[in-house]
Amino acid sequence: MNKTTILTLAAGILLATTGLSQAQDRPSKGEMRQKMQDQRQQMREKMQDHRQELRENLEEHRIERKEAMEEKREELHEQHQQHREMMREKREEFKEKRHEARQEHKEERKEARQERREQRQDYRQEKRADRKEARQERRSDRKDARQDRRSER
Image 1 (tube, rainbow, N blue to C red):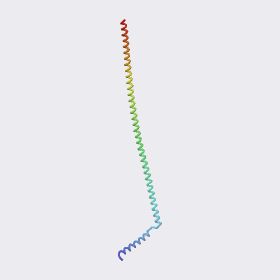
Image 2 (cartoon, one colour; image 1 turned 135 degrees about the horizontal axis):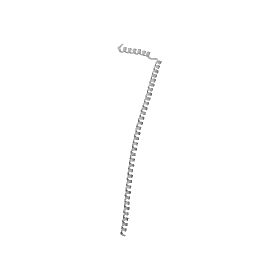
Image 3 (cartoon, rainbow, N blue to C red; image 1 turned 90 degrees about the vertical axis):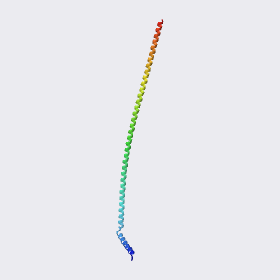
């Protein structure tokens, strides 16, 4: 026998003996079933844990979103409050300016009325003085005319 055949035979024997020992070491059908059930149970538990973790993450995310929305709402509320306050101040300012303008206009009209009143009074006084002077002239003319008539006689 040459070297190759001896090695082939040795390998075959070794394989056969290890195969036998493996067959003896192999678990029975019941043990295999139990092992598979255990593996499935472990997978179920893993999946349950995973789902629970997902639920918790989802709940955390919902809570965070809710808090963020609340914060945003408060921020918007604050902005609206500030805007309302600013608009109220502008309205007040406008009312004050309008009031001042009305007061000024009122004063101007009052002054204009007073000026016209004074002008009318001055005009009336001038007319009165003119009439008085004309009356005085007529009296003195009549007096002179009487005097002249007396002196003619």
